[in-house]
Image (cartoon, rainbow, N blue to C red):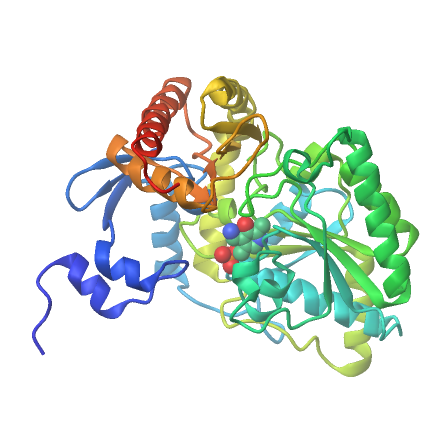
Length: 459
Ligand code: PMP
């Protein structure tokens, strides 16, 4: 078999890409990334891009961090692999579990490791089911989640995700779940409604769903403190307080999916801290290793741990785990990454630079295409609209966003479009001048988009 001669052609020939239109990919081919340095990545043609999304919301310490390479190398050399099944353990997983128990809110005392956020959320579902079985409440199994929430793509996690693309064509949801209204006031607030009234309405909806289903059938509420992949949607004031109050009243567990918000993104170590959430389970990934290694962690409350332990005592073992649960190289890299975040005060940097980013992007609100600028700390969304006054969307939802996403590459910027919202989530090491460079590249891209629409592109 003759080999296609360009890297792009070789890619097209044999890879099915995640979250990619395969036909379009064959037409335009990939940008092949070659290396990274700080907040920048370089493709194999030598073009430099600001990584405005930190890869996939994850490269906290930036690219090319040699200390993480060294941590991985050392561990590979000493003990490249060992598992944590059946009474075995190893120091990197022990130390990371200790560190996470110390860092996370009080009461979250135990950790279960997985390889990805999706697997972590699948594990959450199984843990919650196991917990309720252990407590003799076999009916209490349903989950509550939100429209536009993102919790991953494995069969059960994708069921929690509240995006049509993740359900349609995959015969999902496959677990009992109810999706509640997305807490995005700009989009889902009723005409004339205040934000406080909107929060009241969502609280009433939550309570009505619990009444309708029966509290004895609902196990947990899962949510991202700030919704990210569904459009970068900060929770409105008072929303989480209401949700928690209602969940506690009906003995429903609260799960904080902190896969993106964990480790400084909102300018606090965890998003739960920013919103005053006291979760029973907390899901962490991405910035835990700055994505230098695949790893996720579920933080488990004392109560849940005790019930699981008691039940395991009765029936034998907790029958769940992955070959790479607590992988020594991934956990060693996580420890070094968390040390760097502390030493370089990157959470503090996220607080300070977050203010700079939010203020700079807020200036874009006067641009004719911009409907809403929103965000907290170093994560932000800029929603583009056809009509600022009516908030009307473009005729083909997502098309202008896709244009901006593609066009930004010409200005040396990588951002993510979620339909017509452009997401920013740069590495936590970003500086003030780099934020300015990123904002200017984005402004040039927005101007191109306005011209493109004015030139009669079918938007
Ligand atoms: N939860 C949240 C909040 C996420 O943002 C993501 C990924 N973007 C996931 C879960 C799934 O993680 P993974 O892609 O590692 O499976």
